[in-house]
Structure formats: C-alpha cells, structure tokens
Amino acid sequence: MDLSRRRLLSIGSAGLALPAIRPGGILGIELFGRSNGLSANFKVLEVFLEGGLSHREALWLAGGSYASWSDEPIWSDIDGFDTAASDWSHDGITLSKATSPLQDYSDRLRVVAMGHDLEPHTAAVALAATGKTIGRPRQAGSGAAIQRLAGGSTPVSWVLRGWRGARAARAASTTGLHGAEHRPISLSVSSASGADDIIDEFLVARNTSRDALRDVYRNRYEDRLRFSGSSVRSAGHEAFVAASNAAHDAEAIGAQLDGGTLQLTGDTTYQNNHTRTALQMAAHLLSNDARYVCVIDSGVHSTYDTHDGTEDEDSYYATLQAGNLWSTLDEVAALIDSGALDLDDTLVVFNTEFGRKDQTTGSNHHPDGYGVMCLGGPVGLDGSSGVSGAFDEDDVVATHTHANPTALRVAVLAAAGIDPFHSDNFDPDELDAALGETALIQDAIAYFFGVGV
Image (cartoon, rainbow, N blue to C red; front, side):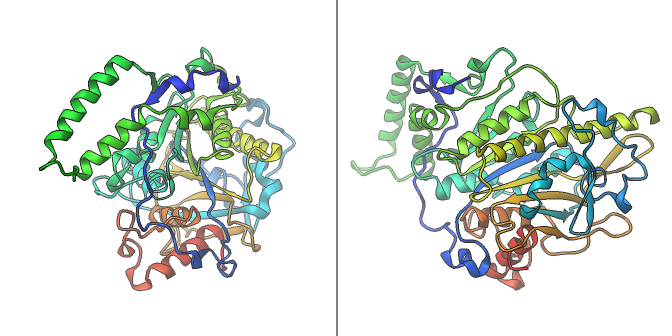
C-alpha cells in the first residue's frame, strides 16, 4: 500500500523528538579519512535477531558440518527456500546454506566472533542492544545517540518490530542520559487487518481541544519557572517542551513515510511475514532522512530461542533457526538487488543477544561465544571483508578487547559519524583506557569492519 494515503499529517507521536544538535558529539573528521578506510558517515540498519542465533548452526559450522548436537534443518519445510543451495566457505569458515542470500555480497561481508557473560534474555538483550548492562544511567541504544547528536530538526532514528519483539524494541529505544526527547520513533508493523493500522498503535489522531488545554497548563507551569521575567532555565523543562512540541508535528514523519510501499500481510510464512515488511519500511526510511533504523527480527513461527522438546524435534528447532535467518537475509538481499538498500552508504549489522549450545534436547543460551555479521558500509571498501575472531575448544570466544557488545556499539557509532566517547556515550575504561580514545575506535572498526587490517 502507498503510505501517502495515510492521514500522516494529522497525527502525532507521543515520543517523537525534534532535537537541536548539541555542541560536540560529532566524530572528528580525521577518523573518516581514506587512510582509515572510512570516507563518509554511514547510515545504519541494525537487524536484531531476537532469541539468540545459533552460530554453530549458521555461521561457524563445526568442521564444515552442523553442530554435533543439532540435526540438519528440513530445508523443504522452508517455503521459498532454494533446496539446491549449498553451505559455503568465507575466509576459512563454513556458513550454512541459510546464509546463501548473502553469498553474492561476500566481498562486503564480515563475520565476527563475540562473547559476554550474561545468560538471561532480559540482561543479554539490554547489553547487546546498548553496550551497557541494566541499571547504568548512560545505558542507551545507538538510535538515541544518533538522534540527539546528528538528528537536527527531523526524526532520524527508528525502531520497527512485528507482533513480538517488545523487549528488544524497548532496549533499542533506551535513551540513557541523552534524554527521553531523543527517543527513536518506535512502530509496530504487526497488523493483520491492513496497512491502515500499521502506525495507529503508536501514533494517535490529534485532539485540538485537548492540545489547547494541555498548552494552557504547560504555559502556567512555565511561568512559575521564571524569575523576574527571565527565560526558563531548566534542562528537564526544555526536554519536555521539545517532546511536547514534536507531538504536534507529524509533517516530519509524513515526509519520511510518504510514498513508501509495503507488502503488509497477516500471513506467517517464510516468504511473507512481519520482519520482511519491517525491512521494507526500513529501506524506505533510510532512502529518505533516516540515519538509523533497528528492525527486531522475532522470527516467523517462533523466535530464535529454540529450547526444550523431544529428540524428534531437534530438526524442527534447526529448521526454525535456519528458516528465520534465511527469510531475513533473503529480504535484505532482495532490497539490495532492487536498489532500495545501498551498501555503499549503509552499514547493515545483524546482531543478537547470544549464541546457543547443546542441551538434552533443543538448545540453551550461550553468551560465551556467538557470532554477528556486518555487511556493507565500511566493510569491503579496502578488501576488508572476511572474519574476525575465533572460538576455543569450549566454544568460548578468544580473548579480544573488542569481542564484546560494548565495542560493537563503539564501532557502530563511529561508522555513523558519532563520537563513541561523547560524555553521554561510553568511557574508554569500559574497554581499555590505556589505549586511548582514538586507538580504541580504530581497533573497534578494524575488528568489526576489517578497516585497516
């Protein structure tokens, strides 16, 4: 459906922010010179594979075969999958045929080994999405930092999900000390009744009389913050006013969504599902003014969180993992093929909260070692595709300063042109203060993007 048919100019968002650029926060241009492999500030599409992608069934096939505890997926049960596809080699590792849609883009692909020590989903999702553990005052998703420090007067950060994925969406939308007025716009594409409902969950029709009443109370409160007629000096009040004013202005949203075409459906198949719809919307937003879009991939029939069952169900779980991943990668490849997604100006990060390991049946959480993928953007500009990191005999990621979610956030922010060590982002001592900020950024982009390797 053509989104220009929506009533976008008569609706607003309770969380929309139109911030001004604050002093500082923009990464020094010297880090984007060709000598470092980065020549532009890239847009970012982050795809969060919710539940834990099984790296041993997808990215690092042990000994070139599937994990000893996993049956091979029943490929014929994945509708639309080309059963003639094969597992393939990428810089010394063997990737599952579920990743075959990316094979044509292997020169822009880097597969990265990761690890941390948090097993519960809630804690691991928060860490993976923000680079910080729960309870840290500065815990924020990359979207908030990009919205605040590079957003200007239009919304540039978005979080999209289907009918599941609320936990990961909340984590990706976290604002930390950047302030709630810089929260990314969060939308659900889960409607089964038609595209007319796609935005209504988060955007509400304006009520002019209630808006006028709210303005009366807001102005009265603002008058009480003045002294002798001087202007209000309250950062909290300024944040409230910014968010409040933004709720009136749907024009900025309409300008980005206008003209987008979505293949919205209530179907739950590997060829037609909410994650594919969200990816289509993400590509359209990034082709306009968006700088960061996070799509929560919560699977088709189930998330990537494949747990208990019977031994006969091991192939079923393997099929869920493979089907989810193939469907998402197939849509991304289709968007690239059509020109809707440009790898020369957009970095695509396939992230997840942890890997998986063997249990009696099914699989369990494995944060000690897992894999993510970085596609396009700075990857491959100077022959920097390939693989970073490895696992030991216990499937634990080899020790590396940057083999963790904090370093991934540093790399993503750097690629987006944002200073990772802005006072409201990260401290060097969260990685290795002895190296210094510039060296930490250079090491992070080397590990995740292959830049300078």
